Amino acid sequence: MGILSRASYVIRSKLNAVLNRAEDPSETLDYSYERLRDELQDVKKGIADLTTQKKRLEIQKRRLEENVEKHNEQARQAVEQDRDDLARRALEKKKQKMSQIEELETQIADLQNTQDNLVEKKNELQSRIEQFRTEKETMKARYEAAEASTRVSEAMTGAGDEMENVGRSIERAREKTEDMEARAAAMDELQESGAFEDALSDKDSIDRELEEMQRDGEVEAELETLKTEAGKGSVEEEASVDAESEVETEATDPEIEAELDELKDDDEE
View 1 (cartoon, one colour):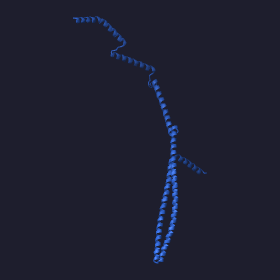
View 2 (cartoon, one colour; view 1 turned 90 degrees about the vertical axis):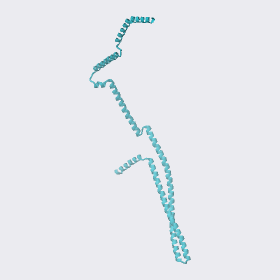
View 3 (cartoon, helix red, strand yellow; view 1 turned 30 degrees about the vertical axis):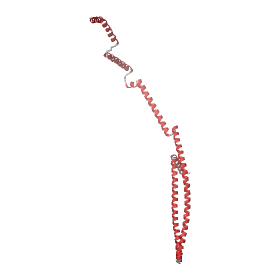
View 4 (cartoon, helix red, strand yellow; view 1 turned 120 degrees about the horizontal axis):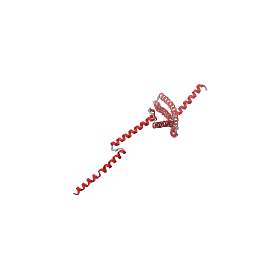
């Protein structure tokens, strides 16, 4: 085998492999079925044409037979008229017509035999087509069932291309999610430790602590101001006010009793 022959063989092999993978058995079976039906139609058309031709010959035969009867009648009349020459001519035409009738009968018989053979082949072909149709539908159903079963199995086992793509997508999404979660946790940890503030500020820890103490002092001072405005002083102020109230109470108790006695006297009068 030469190089070109081997190359051609390899190309045909690869092409056949590609076609086999791309071939849909259902479409192939339907196409074959349609081809058989086309052949059946051709056979039926051939039978119809043959039958038409045979009918034409039969019509021509009947006409010749009518001419034969006509020539017989002409020969009898010619004999009755003592015209043997006319009777002889009529009989000669009759003989010609009879010869033509024999030829037509032979042709008609041949056409009939051909028609019978075609009808028999047509019936056989039609029977085969019906059988093929049954087998075709059965094979298509089996193929579709097998194809569906394969798709389900691939989906369940993850062996299909789509499931592989879905699995890879989920894995990539999981990796990105874990990376983002880790990054967010790291950012929170840095935020809590003050690393971002350290990086953005030029103050040291002592400066920040002093500022915090100053803020606390300012808050306490503002709180005392609010208490004073609300009539609530500090604990020392409240204790001083209570003591003064007790002194004033002790000093004013006799005066209050004297006023009460005067009121009682007024009531008795």
